[in-house]
Length: 158
Image (cartoon, rainbow, N blue to C red):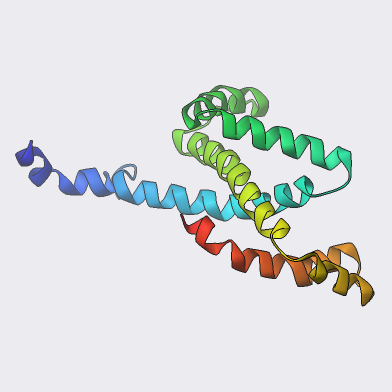
């Protein structure tokens, strides 16, 4: 086994690039970074929808979070693998399948982490900005989200 690893370590880590597809650790890093970059804004939207008083936003976001958190990642991958080609009408690669599955999964988890950070802030922050005449969206964008995102960095890193 050690002979195989010693002789083929570049194939296992990098794949057949530039004469073929990427593989190993390079593809894993590329996939995870891409998924996090796409899922982060979606996670913020999920968090804002979860704390929204509007039932039209709150109910679907809550259903998405509970459904995704209650299903193993492997099932999400299977569903995406079979559902995305049906919805788009085109066959998709394994990279696109994994990217879609990880974005769905990460956005639900990041949404819960960010929601907890928003709800963990003192209510005086929101009340003070509203007393100054800021709208709800400006309060969230300028006062609440910067503090909440700063507070949840340790949870997001893990």
